[in-house]
Each structure stands twice: as structure tokens, then as C-alpha cells.
Image (tube, rainbow, N blue to C red; front, side, top):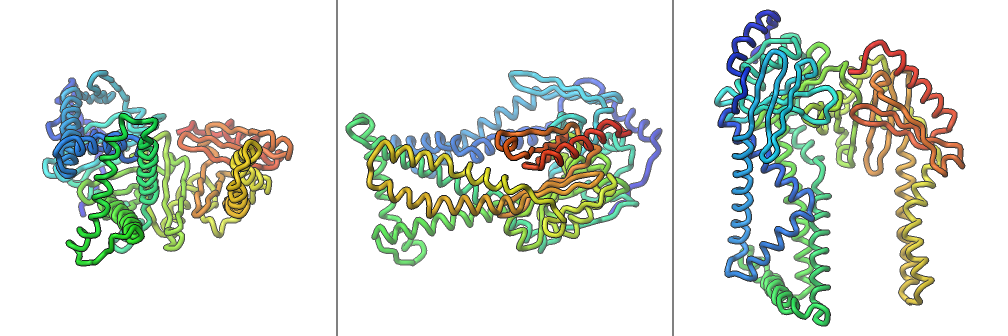
Amino acid sequence: MVAEQPIDPVELQDELDTLLTDYSEWRMASPFALLFFFGSRFAMVSKALFQQVTNLVPLVGVTSLAVIQTELTWYQAILIVVALILIFVFIVAVLAYRRFRFRITNESIAVKSGILRITQTDVRWERVRAVNLERGPIERAFGLAQISLDTAGSAAAEVQVPAIKLQLAELLRAKVSMETAVSDSIGEEVSSEGQQMYRMDLIPLVKASFCTQGTLAMMAAVLGAFFWIGYTIYNVLDPTENIENFTFWRQALNVAEQFYLTLPDKLEQYTGIPVTQSWLSLTILVVLTIFILIAVLFLARAIYFCVTNYDLQLLRRNNALSTVRGLFTKKRTNVKLERVQSVSLKMNVREIGLKLCRLTAKQSMSGKEHMLSLPSVPSSVRDEIVELAALEAGSQLCLDPKTQSFQPISIVYFWQMFVGLIIVPFLAVFITSLLSGFNWLQWVWLLFFCGWVPICATVSLVRWRKAGYVVDSYSMISKSGLLGYSLDMGKFKKVQRVRIEQSFIQRFTGKSTLTVFYATTSIVVPFLARKRAIQLHDYISHVITVRNSEWQ
């Protein structure tokens, strides 16, 4: 491990002046930056396809048409579609790389980017809060780094410059932080005064990967798309209304049915497991396939989590916190405690069982790349980070949903949620009953009262019981949740504005909703007593008015 040595600001400026002679005019990025542009464009396309299933449906449709109308096999059609996507992404990446220019001086950094529309962004160094470095295997091999700037008042990274010299990147970061010097590798950067607060070893990494988010939601979206496609095909198959398309869809349905019926033979051929060709056994097989698909998606998410969070380290250096993580690409994020505006905690069912939690410390209006994010860490790390952030503000609160004395929310909150969940289904069934005399409606009413109403009551009750807030002289915490917990803590001295609202129900019951706005988030406390809401509003407004230091 190579310790950092402090350098004099004069030496820093001299080194920068020497390096910046080559960067004071507009110049292209290194050819290795093409990998950055290709990766970022490919990530955008993948996100657009898989996070919005509706974007994936036309692609599946085109592939299906190619298979049905030509002699291509499914494998060939899929390979052709993937190849076309990669070619398109590569062309866009090359154009973006050719258009990209940047310029670095002692006063500012400027970037020109875009393909059809060229955008120039100039950022003065006074506005830059932190310079974050990211290095992949190729960048580490050639002594390069990608930098992104965390600036005041921006919701995402305003400037990203790929594949610049590591020495320049580290000097720029030292220029901004005025804490210097630098080691040979991001993975080895630890201050001589630094302290390792936490390190995610193999077993904690596996536990955290088990708690990763999004797999079930992705699977539900995919199944929903399949059901929607099936319903659409069913409607199109009506020969009286769609006589022109009937032949085509009947052929497609026959192909699908033949594949479905030959599936048992293929399964027995490859696995040796005999499966009958009855519809019951095939249905069971489909259900098992769905569960296997869920398991595969879950495993893929877990592997991705392990790769991106490998060897996660939390470091403290004076009044700053840093995280270093990544297997192939080492990424470091720096956050100063005095700039932390809010700290969020989230726990799902798996994390509650394993006594883990996800922590996010947000500074200014930063994107995810400039937030201190800790996935599924032990409660001891949570308490230590919250204590550091809270004590900096003078608070003694802690982000613990179990032990903290949270103030409960009014019972009116429960009734509003409960009525809101049942009113629309009730009106739909009621109006249908008045306008028609279907015998099956009695079963709908039975399902409504014996199924939907108890579910809504349970959901509303749990959400009401888990809702709450706690306040001291320096900060406040709000709590919510259904299966898990979500807690948000904010400092009063970082508040931008505060607002009191009253709905019709709240005016009738003498309640109010208090909303405290930060640059990064907002904390909402619903159905407070009107008098209590006014007291908190006046106190927070007073803190905003008399605070000594300007918002950072």
C-alpha cells in the first residue's frame, strides 16, 4: 500500500502548469476513449431495451417475422439482430468520439460533445466540488483514467473526460480538494492519516449479492409483456374481423404449438427425464421454466453486483469519506461530511433477515456517481456513518427503524390510504352491477369483499404502523415502508425551503402535510397536527434565515 504524501500548493501548481501546456487548446481524447463511448452508448441501448419492456416488444416482433417469413432459424435471427445493434452502437460511438473535444486550463475545464447537435460545457474550477476517477483494465495498463466532475447545482455529472493521463487526473483532483498527493493506483489510494472503516470481504459480498434489487420486477415485466402479446394474438385471430391476418397468425400459432408439443421429447433427449405430452405436464414444465428463469436472472444480477462491488472499501480521511470498489474497473467516490445534505437507509425483507441495510449519503445536487452508496452493509457501519454525518450537524439522531423513538402518524393516514385503494374498484363493480345483470357479478362482489378489501386493509395498516418521524434541534428523520423500511435523514442547515399543505380531508380533520426540501431529496411528514406542523415550519424557516454559512 502506498501512502499519500502532502505536497505544497506551489508544487502542485507548478506540476499543473507543466502538464496543462498540452491541454490549453481544444484537443481530441485518446483513441482509448472510443471504448468509453462504445460502452456508454451500449449501456444506453441496453437500458432502453430491458428497463422498458415496451421497447423490447418491437424487436421481438421483427425477429419473429424474420423467422416465419424466411428460412432463418431462431439462433440465426437473434445473432443477426444483435450484430445489427452492435454495428449501430459502434457507428454512433465512433461519431461521438470524433466530435468530442476538451480543453483544460487553470481557470476552467471545457468540453464539446454531441453528434448532430454540438454542446459546449464550460465549468470553472470554483464550482467543482470533487473530481472522481474511474479506471478500467485497459486504462490501468496504459496509465490513463476517466474523470467526472461533481459540481454545485447539477443533478448529474456535468463534465466527463475519458482516457486522460493519470498524473493529470490526480493533480486536478488535488487542485480541487487541496489535499494531495497521489499513489500509482486508485486501488492503493489511502491517506497516511486515513482509516479503513469497512471492507466487504467475500462472505459479506455474497450476502449482499443475495439482497440485490430488481430481479423480480424485471421478471414480472417480462411475463407481463408475454401475456400482453398473447392477448393481442388472441384478438387478432378472430377470422370475422381480421380475415387478412388470420392465415399468418394461424401459421404462427401452429409453429408455436408444434414447438410446445415437441418440448418433452427434446427435454428427454438432453436430460434423460421422461415427460408426457399431456397439457398438465407441459403446464408444470412451463411453470418450472419460469422459476428457472427467475433463478437465472437473480444469479445474473448477483454476479453483476459482485463484479461492480468487489473489494468494496470505506475510507475516512479527516472530514471526508471515500469508497473504492470494482473488479475490472476501480471506481472511487469522495464525499465531504460538511457537504452531506441527507442520508437515506433502505432495507428489504432479505436485508432485515440478514441484519443489513443500504446507505446513501447525498451531497449537493449530484448524480449517482457522486453519492456515497453502500449496498447491504452491517448495522455497525450504518451507525458509524450516521454518527459522523449527524455529529457534524450537532444532532444525536440515528437511522435505526427499531430502536429510534419515532412519532406516529395520525390514524387518518390509514383511512385515506385504505379508502384510496378500494374506492375505484368498488365504483367499477358497482356501476357494472347497475348497468348489467350478469350472474357472475356476485362472484366479483365476493372476491372484492373477501379478497381485495382485506388485502388493502392489511397494506394500509402496515404502511401506517411503519410511518413516523423524529426531530431534534439539528435534523429530522422520516420513516416509511411496507415489506421493508425506508428512512431519510436531513440536516436543517441544508434545507432550501419548507412547505405546509392541506388537502380537503386534512382541512376537515385539522391535519397538514409538512414537506422539507433539500437539493437532493425531500422529506415528507403526512397528517401532522396543524399546530405541530406550523411549529416545525417556523423553526426550520428560522434556521434557514439565521444560519451563518451559505448553503453548500
